[in-house]
Amino acid sequence: MKIPVVCIDRSVDKGEVLTTVEFDNWKAGNDAGEFMAKALGGKGKVMQIQGTLGASVVYERGESFRQAIAKHPGLKLVAEPSSKDWTTADALSFTEDALSAHPDLAAIWTHAMPSPSAPSRRSRPRARRISHRGRHGHVLRHPGNH
Image 1 (tube, helix red, strand yellow):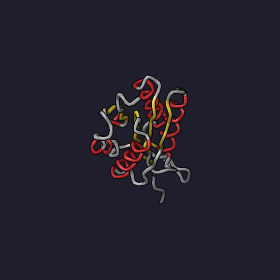
Image 2: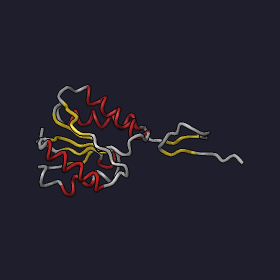
Image 3: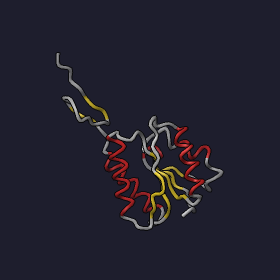
Image 4: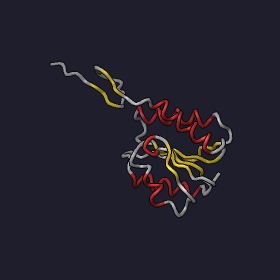
């Protein structure tokens, strides 16, 4: 018996797939990087919080974000931690670590929910102000820190 397979937001490199329905992850990463560049005036330290390394969406979002940031010499990507389980707890820990190492961190981009909520909830005392931008708040900006 042949079972039709439909992939949702992930590609596979084996087997027969009828179709894949996915978000444009290359555009998402690029748009996040360009948004940061514009919002920060092309300068500042930035971070991206990734999901499971090796997943197609993580590669596409991460690489296109790096490419967008690289076009702006005044932006410095200072951290790219990954969360195997895409958890809020991981995002909070990564954010606290990044703010300790880089108190002048200007912006954070997260690849997926629920991680964007963590930096805004518990890190407010460490960051002067956090504002959410992009799809589901995936871009967090700390105005005045650049």
